[in-house]
Image 1 (cartoon, helix red, strand yellow):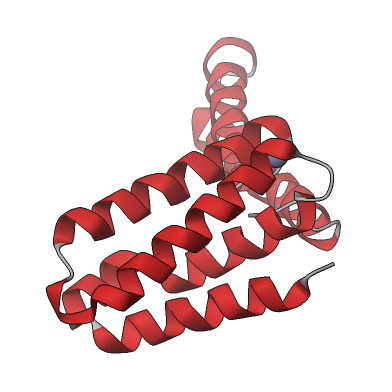
Image 2 (cartoon, protein in one colour):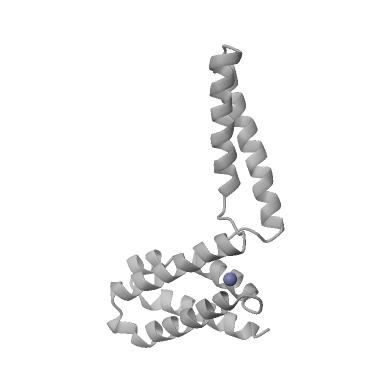
Length: 154
Ligand SMILES: [Zn+2]
């Protein structure tokens, strides 16, 4: 529902990116914001908090856009903070994960396991560390790809 509100928000952000200085534009991370807005929008019919966040974000971005030249870094920081809060909510309440989330977890797990096996059990760390690392990356990447397919990646 109300898909045009989302499109409008995204195009306003794009507009904003064109107005502000390069440094500020970089700080905005528009691509990341867009992904978050799309995910947020997909939950607004079921989640009151998401709906509230969406409304807040919308009025904030409209306010920022209307300021144009008088835009301060403080306002960009506040916007970033709000995006971070939304991102945290999406991860905690809606079980979304950041991109590469499983890869980093399994890589660390694989390496630890490789060290333990290599040192304590099989006495060949030169073999088991890279092996654990390799298996961790492979498994993590596969789970990441699966999460991506299910639309669970932020
Ligand atoms: Zn929500």
